[in-house]
Length: 66
Image (tube, rainbow, N blue to C red):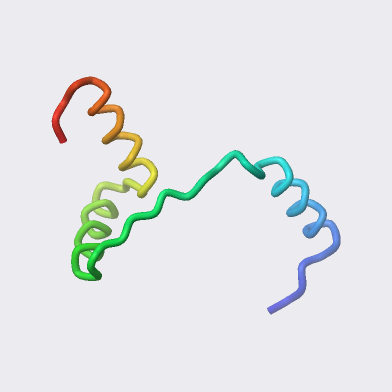
């Protein structure tokens, strides 16, 4: 694997400084089989993990059931 250039390293550092503290992880643990099924469904609908959570929260805020 090739080494990153100094310009790339500088750009990486600037990006990480810009976004530092703006994002926090949201962890959940599933059985492997369950996670595989969830991932299949989300992939089929082109929905990522964060988007799933955003949509679920929006529905709950509107008073809808999941």
